[in-house]
Each structure stands twice: as structure tokens, then as C-alpha cells.
Image 1: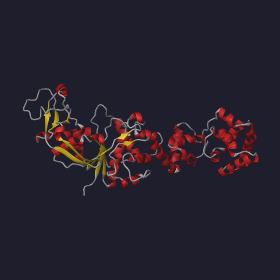
Image 2: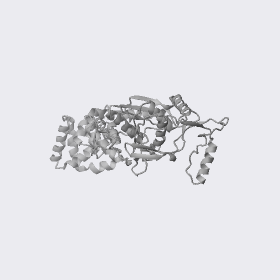
Image 3: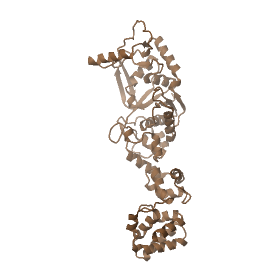
Length: 461
């Protein structure tokens, strides 16, 4: 039985975006499901736009998502001799030929075709010519595309697809500078790397018939093709920079957990019954191409936020504490005057959609803000000043625990015939600087006694 081999082959012309990450995840999960290999290939033939910075951004994005590769990264620009070798062999076998048409000639040809109402395409002028090549014109290598018949293949997502050979022209395999075109380089690479399943975005589906004709020219077995649907933004337009984060790593910066992002990407165009929340292990166990949708997927930031919230609620407090600590320290918040972050996160994790929100919430335990004067005037009335002073005096000797603090607040409210919110709201505003906090008894118990007493003394003076 043939071992499954898939690949992810991005161009290093930018960051790893949502669409690329989803494609990589599907190819990776398919290989892992079948005990196969996942190959990483960098298609860096766009010399003007490719950069090492983009290569590193792609590697960082895959690493954060936990998408590991078994081979690579392979770089196309390090394989130019191989493409030249294959192209020369095809010329010798009469499967390809040198074309000396200049850019000006090709532009004029297309202009004339458009004027006649024809589809612009190469007219094969150097296909079977016996003309002497013009001096000083570096040639390209073109495929002798079949003139009759059709290309038929069964896409594992889209189903049967057929394209007449007459619809395709003799496209370029090798440019004059020796750099392969996409449709040639990808075939040579996939053959050399023994790729069995080509899983990629459906923006490449029109390239597949051309690539199949290269496979046939080389008398090579075809891989299985699976073209996954494009991803649309919330507005129904194709997902782009204007819809949000440029890079997958931006979601890391914005406080999304890796496993939430993987879970969400997996659900963009694939499903396993009605399951919404599932682990990466479950994804590998369940993943198949039969349940990849043929319709475009829609990126929904609200759904991603909900999913991340679910993962944060279930996450280990030590792990979340480390993330909160790192974010607070990077923001210049000192942590000496407060609880261990792992002890703080249980108070805030149930309401946080991201690690950023979690850190922002926990901040009040380390560096509470000063309350707004209007807020203070609203809640710190003369009627509650005396009861608050009783609380402050009792806190000086109280056993510093959530249970004792909670009991003290209840006793004081009962003694002064106050409703609990009448006492708790001004306490909350004074101690935390805001009217919105988790359970007040827990906030006080996790805050340093000296700081709580100092704030009470200052605002009740």
C-alpha cells in the first residue's frame, strides 16, 4: 500500500495568512491520519517579492499552530538545475520546445486576437518551426500541449472535472532566466518528493489540467488532487487584509490559544457531525476529505472569539498564569505587589475571550487604577462612609481569606441595615478603581492587605 505523502508549498511573499494556515492544517492532518509524511516546500521563485523575513514568518506561524513537518523546508531556487534537466529531456523527447518570441511579439499577437474577439493565447508559432533562432534572444521552454482530447480527473473535494485540451495553449515551463513557472516547478517537485495527495486552495483548480498534461508528458502517475474551498470574510467577499489580522501570528499576539485557532481553522470548510469544540488529536482521528465542503467557508471573528473563550475556561491555570505574567510584565506592570498569576486567573478566565482580556482583567490585582471622581461620588455617599470605616478597621485584624472577607462584608451590611450592593459597590470602586470586578471578597483577599487598607484610608479620610 502506498504511503500517504502530502505537502504545503507557500510562496514567501508575505506572512502565513488564514487561508494558507487552513490549507497546511488539512494537508498535515490528512498525513497524520494515515500515518504518512508531511513535506514543507518553499516556492521562492518570485524573486522580487520573496524574502527571508517571510520564510521565517511562515515557519513561526506553522510552529505556533503545532503543524510540524517531516521533511524540508525545500526551496525551489536551490533546485534550478533539476528543472533545467527535466526541461532539456522533454525537448529531446519532442515534448517541449524552445520559443524565441519576444515580449513585443507576444503583446502584438494578443492585441490582434482581442481585436478579432478571440481569447488571448499563445499561437504556437515556434512549436514545429524549422526557422533559425534569432540571435541574442534568450528562449523560454514551452510544453507541447496536446491539441485534441481532454483532461479528466476526479477531485477528492469537487468531484469529476474535465477540460478540453483545445482550451489550453503551449504554456511556458521554464523562463529565459532558467526559473520554472508555477505549473512546471510544482509538478517536478511533487514527483521528486513522491507526493501522493495534493491538497491546496481551489484558486489552483484551473492550474491542475495544465499540470496533469506535464505529468502525462513525463509518463508519471498522477497524485490525488483535493481543492479546498476559499475563505470569505464576514461581508461575503474573499478574505483579505481589510478583514482583520494580516498574519496568523497576529492572533497569537492578540491572545488566542493555539488549540482554539487550530480548532477554528479545521471548522472552516470541514466538519465532523455537529462537533464544534474538539482537540487536535480528535481532528487527526476524524479528518477526511469527504467532509470538506465544496462551498466557500466564511471567517467569523465572533465564532473564533467564542471558541477561544471556551478553551480559556478549560485551560490549566498554571499555563494561563504564565501567559498573563508575560503580558503584564511586557506592559510594565510590576507583579511583586500582588498574588501569583496562577492564583489570579481563576477569577477572570470565565469572562475573558482572549489572553489580552485575561491580563487586562487581572491587572487590577497588581496595579489598580484610581477611580473616576464621578464614579466615586456616585457610590461613596455619606450613608455608607461609616460602615466602610467599620470594614476598614476590621480588615486590619482579619484573617486574610476570601471566606473571612466575605463574612465581614455581610455582617457589616446587616449591622447597618444595608443591602449588600450598597456596601460592595463603593468598596469595589475604592479598592479596584472600577465598578466591574469579579467576586469582591476574592479580589480583596488576593490583594495585599497594606494596599487595600491604604486605599480605604485615603478615600475615607
